[in-house]
Image 1: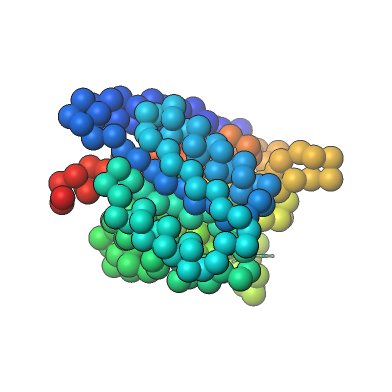
Image 2: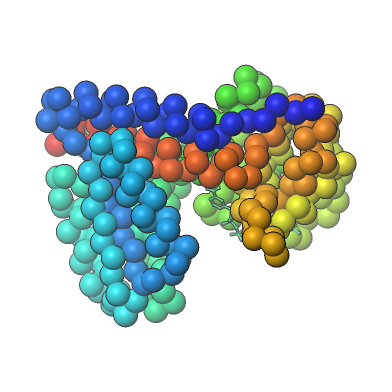
Length: 284
Ligand code: NDP
């Protein structure tokens, strides 16, 4: 039976450590601050923004929430970003996605000062990540790496299969696994022989968004399985992309859903905000 990778526990230990670090920074007059911008009233986004605010407060990080009406113009949003870029008490800026269709999300993300881009979505930060000298590592992929590291499994030379190639999870996590000397295969909806590829993997990262699409007998004996997917079943249960009950019998380590990758994402956002505050203080 696989060992369960306790993302909730690891995230709370990381958050406790950050709280201590923030106290030390406050003692020297630096309070890390995170601005979160939400446009419109998407219910899921509202929940995410609220929980990010609460997590900041619990860690002693100042939280500035900007909730804008759905009809906010591109110009007004860019003007807000520009003000946040200038503010000395704001070290991290996060624009909650998705943005309403009349807003050009790419232009908005590019307007964020890369030194405050705690999500790591600015092209400058993506470029640095791919070049091997990251400023910020995007939150969910960084959380995934920390979860793998927590198992004690050495990534060097391991075969890793990433299922999904989105800009926020699949692609960056593949780059980060490569950086740690894994041999990485990135798969997607057009991939042929997905099952065989997964069967040969020491590490599987599933980021698709399809409940239980990876069956237990696709997993190689002794593999590490990181399930990023969040899917709600017809009876309201949250499940991942991997058939947990089947995979648990063969894997060496596996993340649960919920309680695996999810809690790590917010912990990494707080981590990136504290890093940003320390870096900006040194450069101003
Ligand atoms: P996207 O929808 O942006 O990407 C999904 C990827 O899965 C695409 O690359 C797609 O391929 C691929 N895919 C779809 N069907 C198949 C298939 N049959 N076989 C192989 N690949 C397939 O999703 P995200 O990356 O944003 O998110 C993925 C999941 O992770 C979602 O459930 C999301 O809710 C969750 N998530 C969880 C987070 C957390 O904190 N725990 C954070 C972010 C996401 P193609 O490119 O060819 O279309």
